[in-house]
Length: 429
Ligand code: EPZ
Image 1: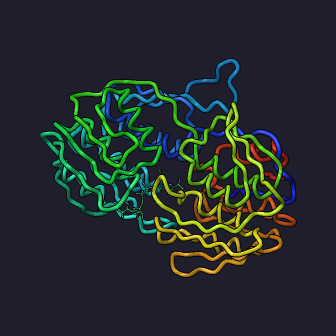
Image 2: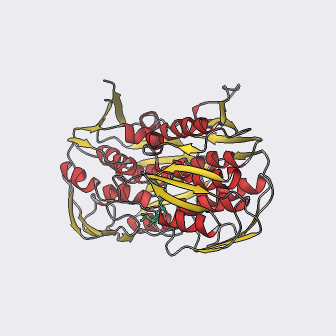
Image 3: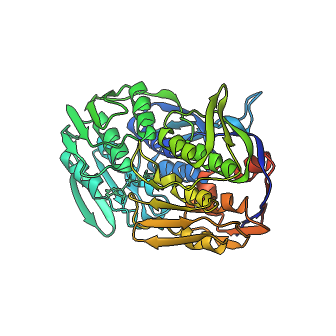
């Protein structure tokens, strides 16, 4: 299996292009199931998860086509992906496909709405927590679906179509909001989703659904009002910039020193993160083509954060933030409130010399003078990249194993970093 070798100590300087957001691209691709016309997505990141979801959608009968390169286009432009679900042949999402990517469970809503039936494998647990699906099931039942869980599958039907209803989520869930929103666009009558996730990726999906003919009010708020329509049509939509990739590279620059412009991204949707970085002593300012990142002094200040649903500090930046505050002169506390087991990177950061104590859902990070390179292993996507950015400042070589986690969510990571001066390479096996 491939590994990544990083020799720490180089500053980062230059530009890093930010890709389209994985977590927006995936639900947008799934939305193609709602119409028999073509959904044209622009700025789609080249990622393993995107390729895997194409396989899953093709299994349902969706034709997918990536268009070729046009003059003047380069890797930073993202892909154009056309998805056409003229006819859905198969409403089963099998275990071998769903188990590889949790987001594929979200096909449940669109399949029920368009075909009146779906048999979708339960996704199972994963490295960051148990991640149940009770909220999805509650919402689909409220929309009139009959559900049974058998043999590891959710078997659902709504032979006369889904019917709008008021759905109050007891807990904020990004996936359950995506799934319910998609289903409600084709349900009869009005659906109100309360305590909906406000993540920008939900807004991006809603904007695209509106382009497809859906009637949605309250986009960006925690109450979504959807008036069902008989059919949706094709549309063209550009995937929004990846705020997690933006935050990750900003923290990499904060660790190494230097000055980098993150292009193709904006401060919108990053308020809580930019505020935390300001407390840490890092300037992130808007410039014409993106965001410029520079550490104010030589040191990072200790800061305490708590992960929260949007607009709070994102759980998807927690591991990277932990890597950053290993380098302070003081103690930072990081409380993870979204996933119960998202601290798998703690042991690995400790292998690089970090001093971190876990107390329940809180990690106390005591700053150390320096990190030292070591062999480390990643357990999930964001944990992997936290080890990469720690490796950028660790003395000597860091070798990262299980690189496939990174390929799920970071496009051309080694190239983007090495273009700015990092000593990083992939070791192919
Ligand atoms: C999305 O996952 C993201 N994935 C995650 O990013 C992200 O960490 C997460 O939202 C939180 O922001 C994608 O967008 C593809 P949730 P999702 O449902 O939708 C509980 C990454 O690294 N819950 O908002 O699966 C759940 O266990 C990934 O890119 C229930 O209890 O997350 C968790 O504690 C990892 N019952 C909390 O809600 C349910 O039915 C929030 O999870 C559903 C969720």
